[in-house]
Length: 487
Ligand code: BGP
Image 1: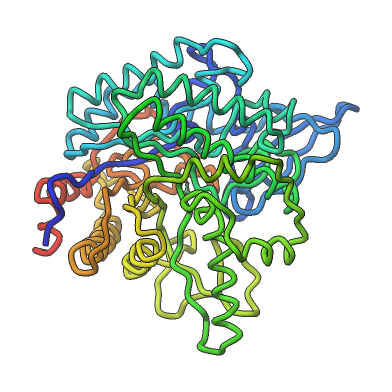
Image 2 (image 1 turned 180 degrees about the vertical axis):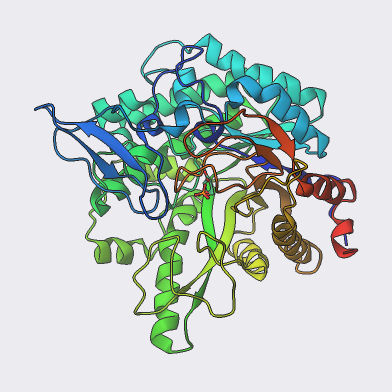
């Protein structure tokens, strides 16, 4: 079994998790720059200062953030470590990283653009040329290897100025700033980029780091997301006009979701929960709010702030393809207290050291589910295993667990394509070189085919080393997936 020659094989990263260079090239500060490191037990946080000079830290953990106190200003505190400042220093290692990715046969690289590299505060009239040049040089290098870009315009971060002054995506002013930023990207990179993502994991963003909002309550959250929907639709419309043939997606944090039992109440709760996450892509893919939106708003106590003309804007910019991340599945019952990334234990599945259930069949399941629902091409833009790697005495990294995870998932993807008839444009695995974890801020949660010598506090040589999985993945790509079936 194979995939077609047009299939896109590659890797995916996000600027604040790889780049570093947070004060170089005229870059402005970004919301994630204020996020500390953390762990599962001691979640990441945003550090702040109060008008009276006292300081504190709120939990910023991606899936469960806290409100900033009234009057708090995010700030840097001595003794705290902020991983985005250095990340894995891709800002100075990009040539080497691209060459290593090309060595595996990647024909696509998904990366995000750091908005504050292009518009340091978000409000300048003209873009920062050094920021544009950085990404342009990367794309020049990629072109040498026939590797095309897949650009994420907004991967969970925005210029901190927009967050501080306007409360980020709470404000419609941020829509205008985003559209201006998109216009610059389309003008500059439109000729060399076919596939764009307007927002990352739109169903999972919440709070200061990801949305720039000081509060996380449902009312603030859904209004902020409505503004993101409008921004996305405007970008899609403008992108199609400026770049004929361009394709737009917005990324959905997907997990397969199963009812815990066949009890009708559990199955109904499962449907409601599924809709709570589908909601986001339903709006963006179809260009209108689904009929069940009222039920979600009622249950969550939300009165959406919509203005005249918003519905037309949404209608004019539906997505062309559906892209998503897939790491795990979840289980839900009427008893479950959960958010998008947790649920009840599944006795049939093993879990990773971070407690994420490993479910390859779930990937085939969601590919079918999404294709049935939208009838638009799909793109798997994140998948992979976060694991602890050991460097052996001879310097090698024997990551058979990663190979097993990838093999099992890729086989299910290929069955969905070849047996179930799903149209899937490509697969970009998460974190081809090790990078900072989004949810915990750790380095030891490693995804890469390429090991980066750095610890949780940023110590290390930053040396890149190929893991065992590097050669394995190279062969998968060289055979268009056929080698998966030989093992
Ligand atoms: C997704 C994000 C990524 C990424 C990935 C893995 O939610 O889009 O930015 O980090 O998850 O998660 P983590 O880094 O928490 O292991």
